Image 1 (cartoon, rainbow, N blue to C red):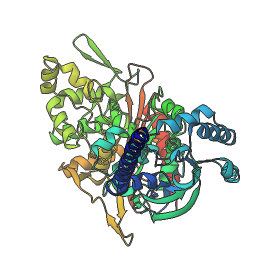
Image 2: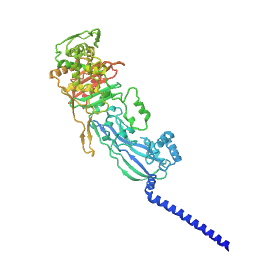
Image 3: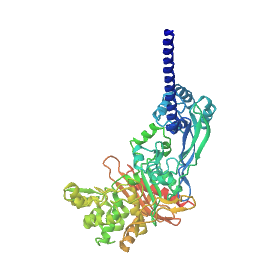
Image 4: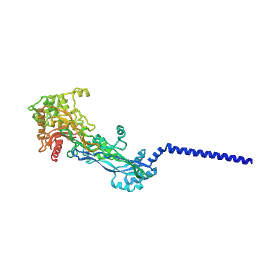
Length: 589
């Protein structure tokens, strides 16, 4: 009996222990459930939502860039892009998807996996693996969607440069935003993967052109396939921009330059509006609109001819005989010469034991001031430069704003250089020699200019009063697209304030340059053209060819500067290009 009692007590204790243990376990489960459901409920709800909701960015179409007559130069069109999401996909499924997709796209499986794995951190965002695929490819992907978990077809806006290389340095190009650009922008303006203007007008007016991206939230199944749209935000297109460029004139000038390297700038001299801006060799900005084509982009970036350099505003050359315009004005303004003053040119000019040559070996004989500018006689201008002296020449050059930026709003413009005794002392700790004055009188030596500076100089000669800041932006569309807002107004860079008689004599001489002098190859029947040729000495090869001119066509006063690298003599190479351009502009309606 006693033994039975002991056994009963022992069983009771065990049952009590089991009951307590069960109660404690149940309590722990209840507490854990309370913790998960109440305290951490919002967190786990968010995680579960992220595991079934795909965020798809919808890029805003960039604004259209027009010429001043509303000819579209840069547009945005639809692009079929293939995106991938990793939501709901394990490693095996991702590998299988990449294998099938690679066959359709013609890409290596490893290339697709590299793109996907590279952006794993953005698991709720779709990843671009193929951009602007042909319509036929898009259809194949759509047909195989059931077998391609995580694959999404998206229609995105794609930048399209309508005329390829035409005006490429002015228009610029777009590219994927860098980390540095994201850090330098206002918070939220850009995110990884966005396209941003890198050069030219695309960079200059990026804030106007880029618009505001939209997006959508879509519910996906366990295989990453879209079920339904939960939220949608319409993208806001960028503003349209109107340039001062005239498409027809730009095209004429591009064709006239052919395969020559160099630059052409055509300005309306009455207001500073740029009608044409060309830098050769050029490039096709459409190459940059595809984010994944790195090899071609690197080829352009590292091109031996530096094709991304805008030679019109960044390349610096000696002005050659175009600088004789400055010397002639300095002589007339300082009463150093009159129309009857003659000098005999025998092909050489002596300064001590140093010989300075004329481009015409046998010389020009006895020539007056007008004849000297017409025939571009070096010996006459050697004498004139020595008579005038360095400081008056520098003063006139500065009044034309040479050696200073023109303040065109394109980035990275160069200043050029107008040397002086003070400049040489500061930079070389040496005095200025008379031989340097003589060399400068024909635009050689240290003197450097850009093509746009000489185009501005001749525009000032054309209107005889003022040189305007070069303008390239005409108008920008308002936010509500209801009207166009003027972006740049004519602003004077400098007032010339030369004597009326000086400018009359100069005009007479420059018109004779075209009618019967070194610039006769630019002559166009029915047009009165004033111009000046120049040949810029080049220690690295063939000389560079210059020609600047002005005329009146179809109610517009045009000024033009042309530079042909390694072209030789300006009268033989650059002047004929000007003649071809002006003759075709004359025929425009």
